Amino acid sequence: MSAELRLALKALIVEACDKDCDPASITDDEVLFGPEAPLQLDSLDALQVSMAIKKQYGLRLPDSKETRRILSNVANLADHLEGWLASRG
Image 1 (cartoon, rainbow, N blue to C red):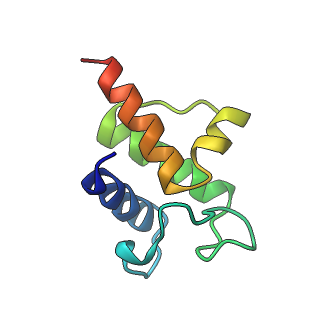
Image 2: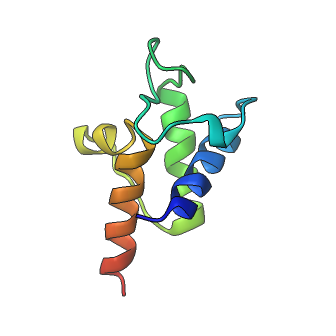
């Protein structure tokens, strides 16, 4: 898994959710959503992140339990996106 992709996703999350933090300070497996999460992202933030991913990479994330799992942390998101990009050739 590429560190560049993970960092790019962290930057995308920070920008999409208008958070004032260094993307590099977000760990790959840190929980992104909920009151216990360091960034405390909510469902509106999830929508913003989904839209930013669609715009940047062309990947559409439907509203589902699977999407919640994918968006739960940067590592899951990067894994999913990398697999999706690879499947597109």
